[in-house]
Length: 385
Image 1 (cartoon, one colour):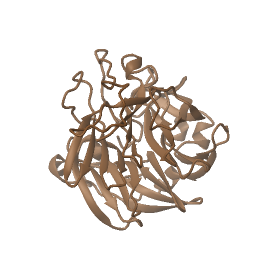
Image 2 (cartoon, helix red, strand yellow):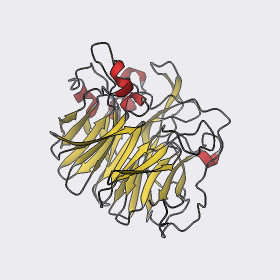
Image 3 (cartoon, one colour):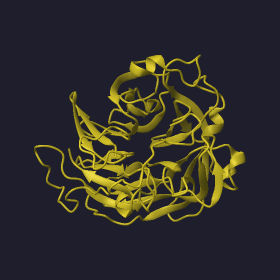
């Protein structure tokens, strides 16, 4: 995640990437193997850059699809050609605990998306959350300089927290997150990439990856919940971000979760530096850091089970047995100090249900066409640890 807020990662995937589907995808994951994680099952495939997941009332899984760009050309500050369009969406899977390789069921469409010409590595509608099946769906859109975007994206969605109802074309602006970031909470100059949202009782939390903070939205009022200082350990001790006056690596919060005590968990990409990613547990008011887990690589998803186990998506962590050297990604369970890893291609959002089934976005930087064919399209996998 660069501070310009345009590009999630800058991985070059060549044409040699092989297809990867969960071994034994049709297996019955209702029976938990006692000697390790169960074989993953594909819940849904053909997604466009799936990111944050939200499990609603245990029976509905919401998926934020960042889309596949569009026909309007845009050149990012990084210099790469991209296209803008309304291909972002929110998909729903009903009874995800039993679903197997379904097709996307898109209940909100027309969301802003910016992607590479082939539809990969999109940014846009990266975040989704809802309190109940009958309430509004909250969607977090990324930010780009309005002058670069076509109407109506530049004034109706850009950097906004939105709410929507299923199958309705009406999008309601809840708050302009990027406008708040112009107050510069982290003291490093304006930069914004709102990336994840968590709907709680009384309001919504939003993680702004480029702003290095988490914000609290109550009605239309936006306030600072927590700001993250630069990480200054390991390789980050000798780095500066964004300039020599700020030693260390940006925290880059990408993911949010809460537990039964109301504590808030925030996953940090930490400037993509290997081994420096971390998860921070905050008090319910955001004022106190209660615990920090470190040693991760590019955290893009976090969840907490009812038993207190922590689940962490590591987008670019090296796999133990990659099907191709260019494929990376690990999902990690942390429980009582023990870490259990599962190879999972480019994971992002992760949630866990009451029955300890874990759902995670896979191939999260791929469009429905896939990085190397349909078997590498955006997907959601289900497994048990």
